[in-house]
Length: 148
Image (cartoon, rainbow, N blue to C red; front, top):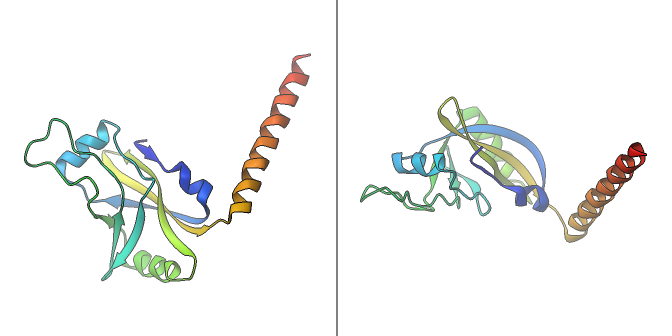
């Protein structure tokens, strides 16, 4: 696991997820292997039958030279045309976007998990935080009770 987007789970309701390959340059791969990436501001856009990952920050590789990459450049996602067509039509709906959730390596290849997301309202976020806090307190009480 290189990077996760925990903010996306707080900001959005996540409907469907999909794993996509990522087209990277050499210095980007080296920076990712060093564990440097941020998915917080990332989103997926669709352009002329292709899917692009935008807003993801992969900092320059410190040992790189003039071949270093731009930190916030657009990166192409590797998906089948049918998947691109289906996800573009779903993302065209009002209030729906596609956000990256996780960035990781699988069998030596960089992969990104993307999700269809609908925005949460403020009260939804507060309710989710309250629910998580109540669950933690209940688990804590159960643990304390089993110790006796």
